[in-house]
Length: 382
Ligand code: SF4
Image 1 (spheres, rainbow, N blue to C red):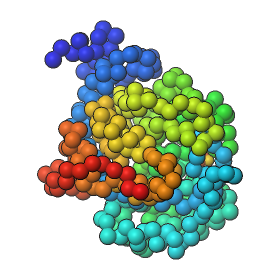
Image 2 (cartoon, protein in one colour; image 1 turned 180 degrees about the horizontal axis):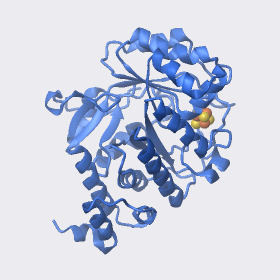
Image 3 (cartoon, rainbow, N blue to C red; image 1 turned 90 degrees about the vertical axis):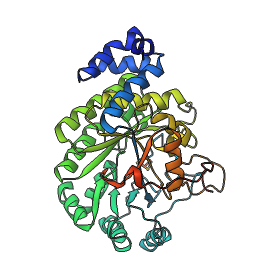
Image 4 (cartoon, helix red, strand yellow; image 1 turned 135 degrees about the horizontal axis):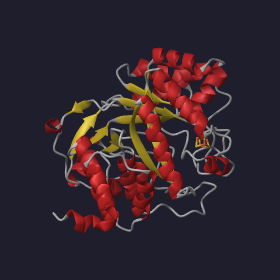
């Protein structure tokens, strides 16, 4: 294969750097965002992706619990929190949490993912109760819970240092911490779009505390909310430096912004080019992150299949009961699920080898164990 034909003279120096294991610079990141040669960017990202993860494409069987949509932060990009004319406010009781867990008890999920709004009326015991309730109903699952902004709130209502709170939560059953809590590490975007939330400096302090507590964490980038490409590249560079220091991040998930129902509804939806390019640039800039995820709910299953050749090695999971963003805003669509068979088909059809993982990327089912999927169309269950 003539690599120069794919990459052109513009991207060849980056290819040379990758061959020699050299780290890409901030300027390289800008070039990856501005070149019209998206295929070349994907080709480069795929080199790193296959070097780190071979032909594997990971998925997980997981359930999401979004415990409240009441939130005092009012982030402009968010359509999840309860507002006048929007969704009704709710906070799940422990009985309701238990019911949701019991409803999926027949499915051998390995992870429960808990996130919600910042509801100032919730006491510390509520958060501890969430984690304990999951462990009561499903003692074997891994609990991934609370973004950095929620951890700030939990420590505030607990009136304890975050270090102590994390120890108590670990004792209750916490396993790791999801990404989110900062959309892009930019003071400008923070001031314009989510000024009531923690800023980038605090987000990084919290990430360090999580690492010191011996917990793994995930990272995200929300793109399409008015950030510049310089701010995106800077986000990656800051995360890369933090990971050099802590080594506790397991994966990066670039998240495609859904403007519907937000204060930024006038902004265009990110395109397929945006979705693939952000995944590819993440893979190339974050050379110390083991995994890059294409979250099918945000990117669609179709883009996720292509993304498996643009740097992504993970499609996330079956995702029972995710309520933050809906793929289809049609009335009546209340659940978004891909079954295990559908995920396997999605991955196999894209030419990758499906591997079921747990939250820490340990293999639950190796490629040879995966059942043959039924030939049927992917669907979002209404
Ligand atoms: S993104 Fe999170 S913190 Fe911001 S308004 Fe939505 S729920 Fe609240």
